[in-house]
Length: 225
Length: 228
Image (tube, rainbow over all chains, first blue to last red; front, side, top):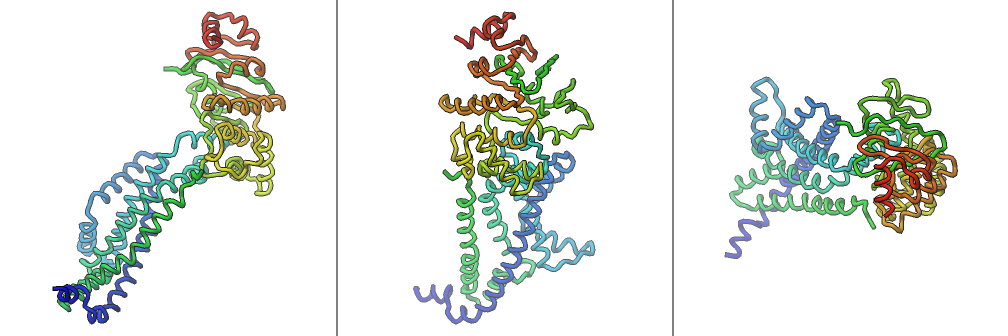
């Protein structure tokens, strides 16, 4: 019984055989995740800042975007874009599709988080800065945004972890990330060891990110007394 | 609905004009109109000869010359006392770092907080925070300073330090418009007292006149209420 378990999940021979493939998957996952984090958070921040100008039609569009991309399951979006766009003549490589979709999903969540952060800064901060002659943009850049960003570090980190884990969806459209490599290896070998390797790879990748998030959370509190 | 209506008020240079009145009388609204934090619907407000309501007036440029001190201090919590004072110097007046540092430290010294320059607002008492806020305005060398209930949020033992700074400002020739409930301070520092009620000026005069011989019944009732 005991050895059967080891045989299925921790087969040493298979670990050696599929290690390079899983490692390749790790590389791809890191690439997509990094690209998604950069574009997703940047777009989210830009949208929240655009919304702070309070131009009604623009704000309405941003809210619509954020609500749709937060409501739809990322898998639906991935399939829709991957199998839908070629019909209108746009052929994106699967890597690009995954990057685009996850970026937009992360951007939608980040926009809402940044916006909530901007709103949570008391009116008095705006008034104090404006009363010294600082303009709207100056106040936003030097007074309101720095405070809002610190407040949003924990929720942004959490959301980023959730969305980047969705790189595993790359499996269904053939992106060679961790889960894709693992399931391919699993079907060739008929053994769950590669999946276990994939799981371990995710842990190795994401536990440091979770720990980093906790560190940032404590680091960014400025009300240190 | 008018919060304030038919106000006609002149503050001469180097005067300290004190606005008193019951809650909701429009004192703060009037004060906040003076730098357009509150937008008046009609009328004109001139500061240093310039109509701040005029379309051609750059309100940001005018606000540099109109200092404002708030009831809740409104210091930037992510910056040190020094950073709070230096921000507008570098970003609005475009001073060099060295110059801004000199001016900011001098302003902090003026409110007696030179040694707290590196402290964050959370590390300061309410009174110290309010003095930093005064330094933040003062550093821009305003033509007039507006005080919106500067001591109302302070514990009683911290009020004295803030009033002392305000007294020194007055002695140095600063023009000041003050909304406050510190009647003793009003009595011995103000040049003129304005009593407001229901969004209008009911009575104005020198401290002696308002506190000892108020003419209007409403003023008399208010004074009797607060002196008791």
